[in-house]
Length: 504
Image (cartoon, rainbow, N blue to C red; front, top):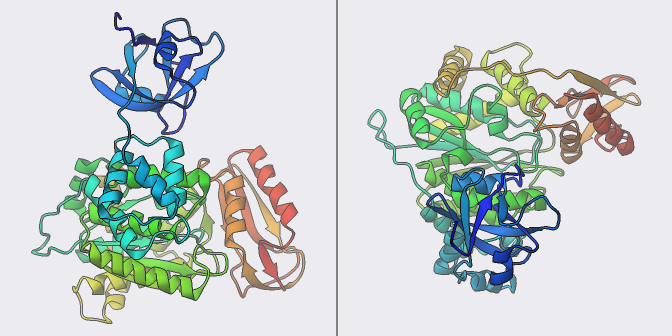
């Protein structure tokens, strides 16, 4: 440890999510000589690897003289452990920050500028503050169509792209996506099962929840492992024709994962980034034909027919520019789909539809069939208007259920989702008819109950629009894994009066 910028590592086990942080004493000789202060960006080397990290200063005796610590994410990225030596130095200046700042001031970014920014993001050269500034500068409607195409192209270019061998002499690779905003809309596992049973290739990478009570990957994880790398993903798809894995572990669009990491705490959904995010992931997974579902409703993510139409056209336009055949459809986003809202509860809905149970949620079944039939027709594997019949046969004769079980086994083994230990119904205060649902507030109840982290937590939704209810009838049931979280969610419900489900 003779290098003047060397420090011995002390493992404090601090979880900073995915942020790379280096903890230094206030009087650390390296900080003093190099001028590092709190929030400085520094280059950290160890074990033959190098990362960029943000300095946090420790003003207590947590670290001894000559010691430094790393956040767990940074320590794992370097592959270092207790007492290993790390070296600190100044990073090279990040040239693309001037391009990012020009976007903040409202200037347009061309293909080259976008590529420079995205490349630096993936190399870890942007701090959380820089990422937040970029995300915010692109939010709202601050990206025009050319910039959306540039961002999508850049995100595809910096990641890896899977090439699939032709399947049954067919070079078509299909995929589907829902822009979200609708609790419980868990069509993906059902659609993948139907489409793969039909014989098409559907390598589905899904996200975890960003601002919702469950993402597709969270729900699928209740039924089978989803953290598969590219080699395992390829093995599953070549064996079964489809998979449902978490996109983050496949690392197909690394820039997207980094942007989502910042969008999550900011709760920002930017149209341009949404389009680039969706399409870069599809292209990276090797897809050629993609169906996108855009739920439209007063409390969905997309709230006006005009906004839905613009998004639909832009998805198709940007898709075409990056070599994807995209068909976007606008669907009813006025209320939740299925009964479950939360990972395990949604998984039970998926199983009920695939197993053909009489009490399976009809709306979830219907939406899944609509999307599956569009994909089958778009791939040209059946004549137009015959996709629906084909999808129904595969669901009803059990072929989709058999295929789903095979995919789960190939991904590492099928599991039974857990059930919550605590639940309580929320009752109608008076007789009447359900006329409206606030999707966002209902999703919030599920999140306050602990979803998606507490996997069995969430909401069981029992009163779709049009339901006639009597006073005291359960409208929904709140599920939690701990009594405290159940109380927390119910406290919120009590402050909302009848704003969540309107009964008139």
